[in-house]
Image 1 (cartoon, one colour):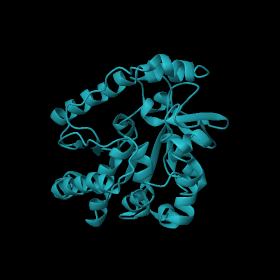
Image 2 (cartoon, rainbow, N blue to C red):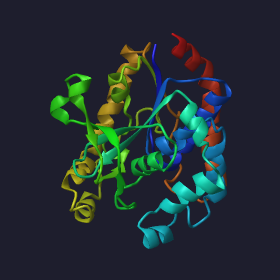
Image 3 (cartoon, helix red, strand yellow):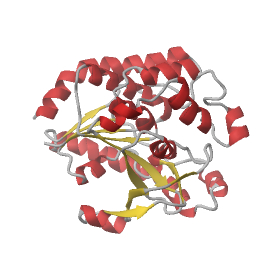
Image 4 (cartoon, rainbow, N blue to C red):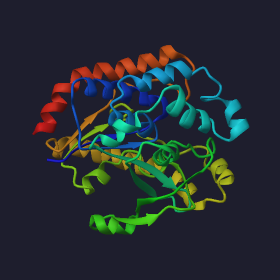
Length: 310
């Protein structure tokens, strides 16, 4: 029985996920695979490296540092979350990511990014833990307009378009070489890739959402501005324009799964809105949402274990 966990993004809402995952690691709850989007990827990678508490530690320590996330960083570098500091100085120098453990752990770890030329999701299996994977993590979490495009190399799986939506896995996803392709936030094209994991053959899937039950996205109110700023990427702007439809369809699918696939899909989400901004400079706020995730992890741990064991 192949087990997996799907991790939604949502910037600092991801601290809910971090608290939940730390509890799972402490209690020895393991998965055969994980797929993360945006913050779900950048925080979730610590599940494969077995680094309990790392996400909380570096976010609290550096949240007030202008190099971490600030308008100054956006003006100076083009990235509101500073690429050099966040993705290289922190994981390689200041709070080292355990690359060796990441490589040795057998769990598959996937990230989702959006191809800026096609507007389609791209799924990358990360196996190295070094800069080759770091760039895919950065691409997955790079918000359009607030971040620079990320150019990644290597082989990946990319969506073959809606006309293949009812086809086999081989038809839906084709292998490509990503040299020269520009990527941004995976949440634009596949915010909660549960169906991707089903296609990969995962039979019992835990889905971690960072929005409360019943949440639905509204149409983006700044699309004229986005179309102007991203005028070189018309397919990406189309994906952004229909993002709320994609997201809401996935939420409807999860609601259906909770009724019809209870033995195959388990959804965990906060009981109420987390009420945290995308960028946070208050360590207490980060701790609050992390603690919420921990409490939910403790409450649901045995249910998750029983679900995975079937």
